[in-house]
Every structure is written in C-alpha cells, then in structure tokens.
Image 1 (cartoon, rainbow, N blue to C red):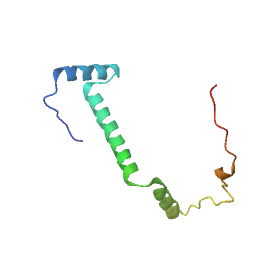
Image 2: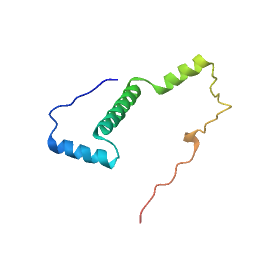
Image 3: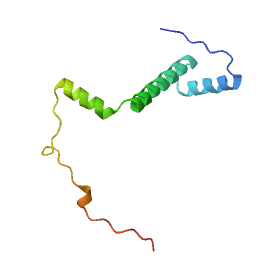
Image 4: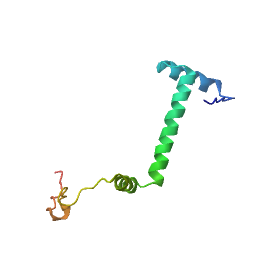
Length: 92
C-alpha cells in the first residue's frame, strides 16, 4: 500500500478536520483514507456514467452470457399516447 503526505495545511482546516474525524469515531488518518476512497469511487462511477451507455453494456453482457431479453408478449408496455389527457388543474 502507498503512503500520502500532505504538507502546508492551514491550522484551522486541520483542527476542523480532526474534529470531524473525532465525531465519526476515526483517527484523522482513517478519516482522510475514508474520504479519499469515497471521492475516488464517486469519480469512477461518474466517469463510467458519462463515458459508457449502461444499456449498451447490459445488452453486451446479456449477449455474452446468452441471456434472452423480454419480447413484446412477455413485457407489454402500455401506449401512453392513447390515454385521454387529464384536465388542467385550477386553483380557485
């Protein structure tokens, strides 16, 4: 495992950070590690969502695994355009 050293942190910021760690029942090191893991995971998920189409990847997975999807008879969806339009709401 690697080591990270951060220099020149403002004293007030460090004091507040240690208070946060204490409230979370962690050492400052454990709190920093937790925050770095959380931020890294969020970044990875955001990158994945922005650069890959989930449904394309799901279709590829299903094809590779030989999983058949639903056809129209198995999973019929209603046609929303055939339903009558609701009257507008008036606040009188």
